[in-house]
Amino acid sequence: AQRVTQPEKLLSVFKGAPVELKCNYSYSGSPELFWYVQYSRQRLQLLLRHISRESIKGFTADLNKGETSFHLKKPFAQEEDSAMYYCALRFNSGGSNYKLTFGKGTLLTVNP
Amino acid sequence: DVKVTQSSRYLVKRTGEKVFLECVQDMDHENMFWYRQDPGLGLRLIYFSYDVKMKEKGDIPEGYSVSREKKERFSLILESASTNQTSMYLCASSLGPGTDTQYFGPGTRLTVL
Image 1 (cartoon, rainbow over the protein chains, first blue to last red):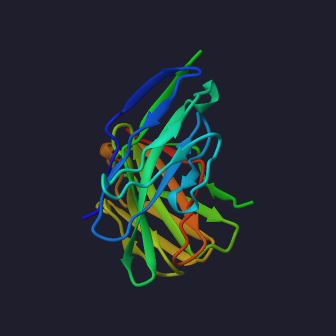
Image 2: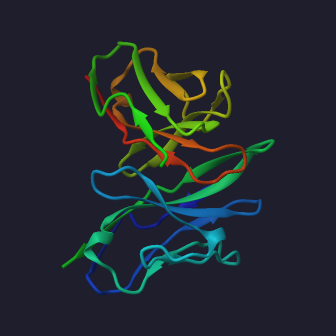
């Protein structure tokens, strides 16, 4: 069965410090991974997807199949990065249909 | 711009009441989802639908049912609300088969007394 693990419930860093939010997955198929973010009083939204290999708001994430990880990184954290971050795994649920399974989330606080 | 709306931001109900949570999307998306979001548990899928009148159980369907009579609307029903169903409920939609981005509504915080 597929599973996403985010080992840290809470992560606190100072402004300007590097930040890494950890995500590990378990899936027998070919993984597709995403990071979703929820800022205070805003709706959950997609931050980035591994297949795009993009950098969004200074964040990057590399899929490491050997370590089954998809950690989210930013070299210099900003206060506006404070939010709840969810790692998600997309998997085939039958036919051409897909679902997401989410990790439990990491609450990032960036202190001034 | 994709818009997913939910009928209520806050709802307070009593144990045993029948509760309807409504979700509407305006982008002709085929897929719609209902999640509940709880601190320390993340998002858990309750039900999803890939087409009108079609539904499939997610990871925690017990105590819930759904209805999708029109493409744009996906309703979550609590037949007999219980206190352990107090939670934040999120609706999401995505374009169609194989698409990855899910667009979320603002959420409904349901309290069952």
